Image 1 (spheres, rainbow, N blue to C red):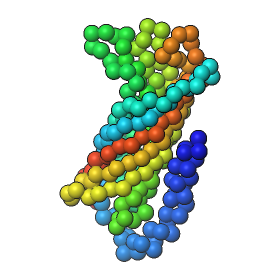
Image 2 (image 1 turned 90 degrees about the horizontal axis):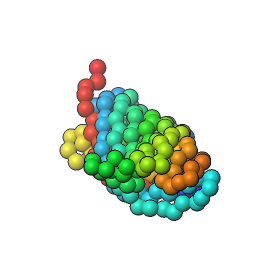
Image 3 (image 1 turned 135 degrees about the vertical axis):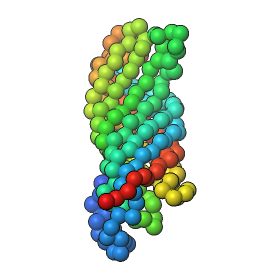
Length: 204
């Protein structure tokens, strides 16, 4: 929870101080310089922990994938939808009783204080989902949130690469990879990913 508070405080701090920073650093950029639409793909690894009212879980390193996209009304602001997921157990096309994962779908806001310094902070809120194909497994969902940030390195034109660090947490309802049923299932994850992000389209 201390890590979550630090990440969330970092995002919140940039949200508060950003307008003053933007005016000081970018006084000549009254009009947005980037294309209005954006999309991204990210991949990496996350350390995810699933707990419940009945037991305390342990952290496990798992692959992390994410997709996002939306609209960029200003150079310093991106808004969009983010789908993020962590695979706990791979599925098997020949065995429908295998497969388990956690995902998070919600809205995100990215703040980019300066076009010259492409550091950005992200915050988001949405729906967390738990999928368990085990015979005694249950699917569940609940509210979830995320916070993090990264730094964009321009590659070519409107395409950039961005190393990212993030924290996500949420409630998953009632369900468990074991039996009997556990209540108050929830997760938390610290992840490190590489994001490919691009802008496209024309402003009117």
